[in-house]
Amino acid sequence: MKDGLRMLGLEWRLLRADAAAWVAVLLFAAALSYSYFNGYVRWGRQHAGTDNLTRQWEENRVQKQQRLQWISGAPAGAVTHTELDWGPRQPQWAAVWVGATAILPPAPLGWLLIGRSDVQPSVHIATVWRGTEPTVPTTENPVKLLIGPFDPAFVLLYLFPLLILGLTFNLVATEREDGTLRLLLSQPVSLRALLLRRAVVRGAVIGAAGIVIGGVSLAATHPVQGEASVLRLAMCLAGVALYGLFWMGLAFWVNVWGRSPAANALVVFGAWIALALVIPALAAVTSTFLFPVPSRAGFIDFERATRLELYNATPTPEEKEARDAALLAALFSRHPELRNTAGLNRGRLLNAAQGEEHELRLAALERQFQEQRIRQRALVRAFGILSPTMLLEDGLTALSGNSDERHDDYLFQAESFFHDSKRFFWPLIFRGTLFNAVDYDRIPRFVYREEPLRSVTARALLPLGALTAAALCMAAFAWFRGRATL
Image (cartoon, rainbow, N blue to C red; front, side, top):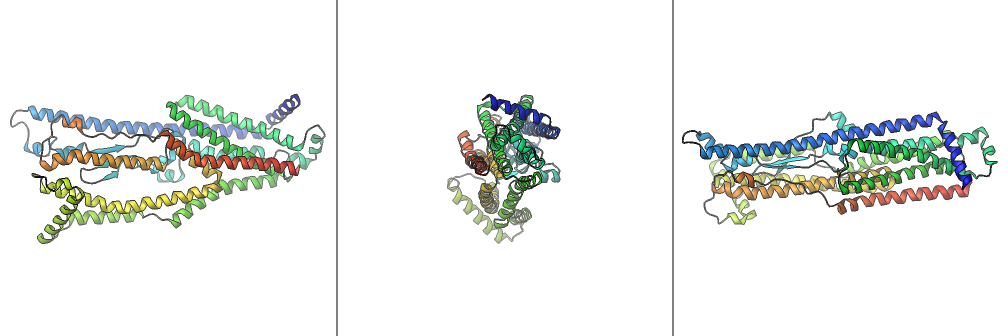
């Protein structure tokens, strides 16, 4: 035991004298610190934007409610006919001004993988007739969106293995070339034990740097709140540790070959390029080629043609009557409770029928898009078995809350909320019922219900379990390979 500690102390002194190693560690620490800062700033900006939109909606509601209260008590002639016909007492215009707005709050650990939120619309609005549509488009530089932000996930996925390989690819190769390895082995120590101790010392330095920098950054920014977020973060750290174990095992395996430092460097950094860059890029290209999604330009053209046909066409009176009858028949078939209800305004029923027809036509194209995206994700995850980088990214994406599944769940809740909003406004609009001030308090509000923690962890356990198997297999293979070779 004492001999083992003495040897570890010796390896620590040797590493402490290696200036290049400490430069690499300091650069990694600086990159990790900046990534935490950058991720938290953008995450805080998202929170501020979400709070601002929610506050604007509430202030607009209160403003319309107060105006209606004034109109209700105003003397005759004080209110114009325009405001009586188009003002806050009309449910149709109340639905326009304080309509259905669904806002997705920032992900619980969004600062960890902030780039995923750049391409996921977090605000959707819905008119009283048509379905949800994304709004508040990003104002980010397109080049920045293409490259992605410098967040902790980027550092951990790509720079962390580079640091490990840079410190461990040359554990004994230089001594072997210099001829001093035989002198080292003249001491009562085996080559495998020497390799293991050097790997342990370097791994401890890397782990300590990550823990200290991560702990200081988290303490400074306080982005982790609640027991659920703490559990998510703990699982993320476990995944990063397994990721590091995989690359340490790879470096140990290369070192037992007995090749030169240049050969070791070529193998380990070639493996990094293949596993961290080539395979993910190949997965993205293959999934896009095999399962292409409808183009954005094609969707815009289809939406424009549908809108022109439904709202801006100029048919003959006979054609218009036949079209309106068909639209109303389709509306009544979807909502049979409206068919035999007396006193409904036909013009507003036609507006609802046109809006739903527009929504249904676009939904077919959107459904095709979603089906292709699901197939793409499945293929990319199949490729992930070949790349520990993809496995860790999949796990971090699920645990951070920036996953496609969370966004799909938000869209599902937004659609449900929109239908609740229609059920609230439609009876008032179709019957021509005037709004009271108290009705503004009854307007449905969207509150996103976060995914159950068990669903998130179950989704993350699959890639993290595969990463665990890959890390343990690599470590075991390197250990037994070293035992057979040395």
